[in-house]
Length: 126
Image 1 (tube, rainbow, N blue to C red):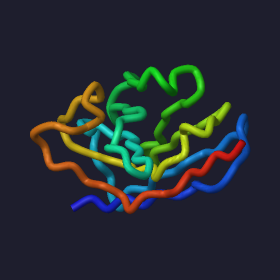
Image 2: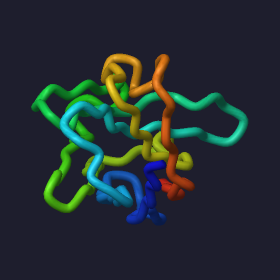
Image 3: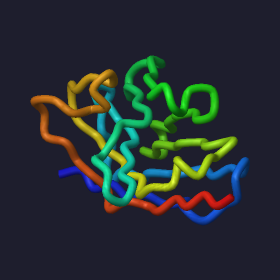
Image 4: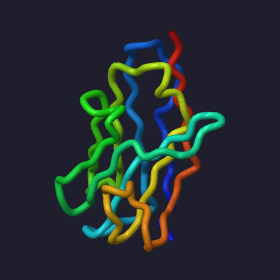
């Protein structure tokens, strides 16, 4: 059972930046997908970005390409999401996800069990 704890959310103005972190309770190995998924009030969860723990491949939703960067520090079992040029439509609860042998193109969702964090709120105001 992998436990994920997100941090780094907050309130910023349009154009601002935030860096989200997701700390895993244990080493997930080199065969994991880790990603970020967000959910705005009244909307379904949507994938934001994903990365493999054992490779450099990344995948982003078109709405965040060029503004968000996903990265990981395997030594610290930590996933990051650097968010720049934030927009009001980025306002949502952001969740960290991890799944073994899952695809980044599905934001780590598939046949494998997905581990979720509790979420961290991001609010962008104009």
